[in-house]
Amino acid sequence: MQVKKKDGRLENFDRGKISRGIVAAGASQEIAEAIATEVENWAAGAATDETIAAVEMRNKVLELLRAQDPTAATSFEQYQKPA
Image 1: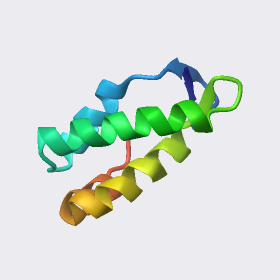
Image 2: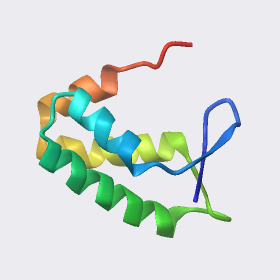
Image 3: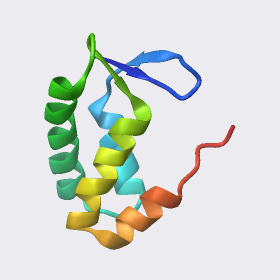
């Protein structure tokens, strides 16, 4: 499966990136792994032509993280990747 970035580039789906981002936001490794698995399963069904938009994945991560760890969700949401 491919992830379409904001700038239009495609990169391979990497559940480790999701997990690392969630841990960096302050959630536990266990929560991060559980959410990464849920997002991976969701993305497989939500993808069009084996491609999912990065923004859609980010929104799904936030939705799941808010339910598990609201503080980490706030931190995750506020993170902006440097241009």
